[in-house]
Image 1 (tube, rainbow, N blue to C red):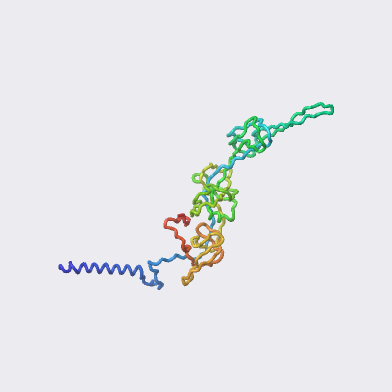
Image 2: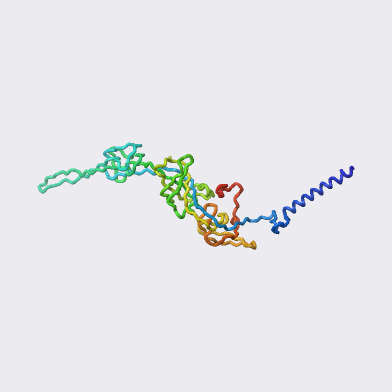
Length: 338
């Protein structure tokens, strides 16, 4: 009995552990063929690049930008006559309508005396001109730049009048700018805790936008950290919508829909506008880099307009690119943000 406890049982335990270890190694590196298909599972120790098939789908190119409500720029009221300020009839903070009187200007131009044939000199009265300066827009007087009896030149600022209107503006990331090639005429603005989403008209792209020069995740789906492009998008807030300067806004710009088109993930394409390169995987496993032409994209999926056919297999990620980390993909849009 002592011999069994001292030698036999320990040896049996060791043999059991060895058998378990061998079984685990076989399962991990020498998997048996699948009974149904006869295919052999890929050894877990090998790194295999994921592939995806070119498929038919719909691409909705809605660009969403982080934007801000801003008051429209005040209009400068210029002097229209070189002379003296006779009256100022408004005060700072006063509401005015377009065409309302702001100030009156007066100028005097001396005339040379008349000398008759007999030497008589007749003095002539100066030429007097007056001008009424009016507001070019309806709004509020935000600045008065002159006082009574002040001398002014043509074009000098007499006052500034801020209209009671607002616009929405935001900075565009480079990839968003490429997605707005079609330049739609309006977008939809939404303000958390504010009015219902409203049409923002007169949409224009160009110039430095709010936050230009910083890195931003401007698009809820385009938060790729590419930074701003130096371009802004701006549109007008309807007069019947109540907003306040400084409110954070989401501006959604519809830039096209492509239905029943060939699509691949953007992660599979090197390049995202006009042309790109994908790695096509043949039936025998060989890989080929192929140039393709691209249509619109939604920040996740891109339309393929040439170079591939439905069912072609391509690498899901550009070779050498870092695959998105777990937790870095938006569960709603599927887009990468870290």
